[in-house]
Length: 83
Image (cartoon, rainbow, N blue to C red; front, side, top):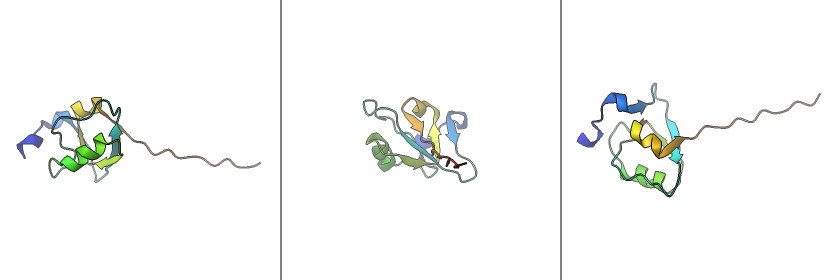
């Protein structure tokens, strides 16, 4: 668990049980560090999924990881009303 012992200031945690979806910015720049994206500790399957280009739901993102990943926002389409 010491791998996840990063100072709280270096982690963007999602509060109030809200989770965030992230994806890799570029397949040419995969994550190679042992960063924790869950409160339960390091999970190689999450890092493998991110590195494969999938969108992954996480609980927190270490600050240095933002150089490699970006948040996936849900796009809401507004319906146009016919007048």
